[in-house]
Length: 206
Image (cartoon, rainbow, N blue to C red; front, side, top):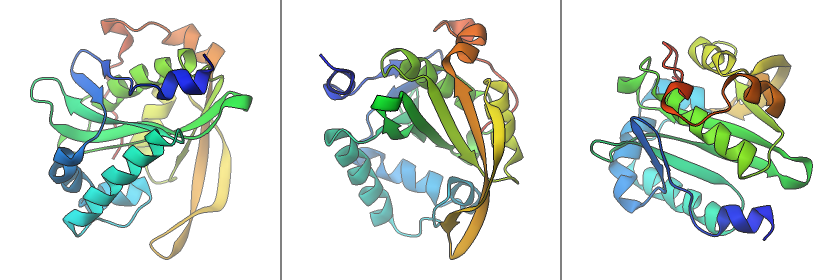
């Protein structure tokens, strides 16, 4: 079985000490809207702030379609105690032939600086490097998004440069820093899926 078939044959649910990373569904629309109707979250995520529930329903449908058509893989980040969606994370721009993908994430403001996105990304990165056979992971971050940049650095990503006016949203061009993580760097520091492999730092994605 090739890697694409293996990854997309069934949605890969992942459990961490405090989180359940699972498939997003229609019942998550209210919680997703609560996340992305926050201007600070949406701005750093690179989208317009949600103002209508239909936007949340549409995003969930798009995420599901992308999985069914084997394009991207995005997890709902939910609390284990109540299964409530508090954010999402996953892979975009996956290029299997080059063993590369980009990673993205967002988290509800109420859960910032609790180490939760560190925990989620630790599991997702391990999945990508093992099950998706990735060698290089990339992330693009606004220069002013200091918490997200600190989170990536904590997880072993290295800043490789500034992409000038690379992003465009809200009618404006935006500079973006590019961060990258190589498989050998990750295995040297975080390569085990166990309770102590989840760094509980003070920085999380805004």
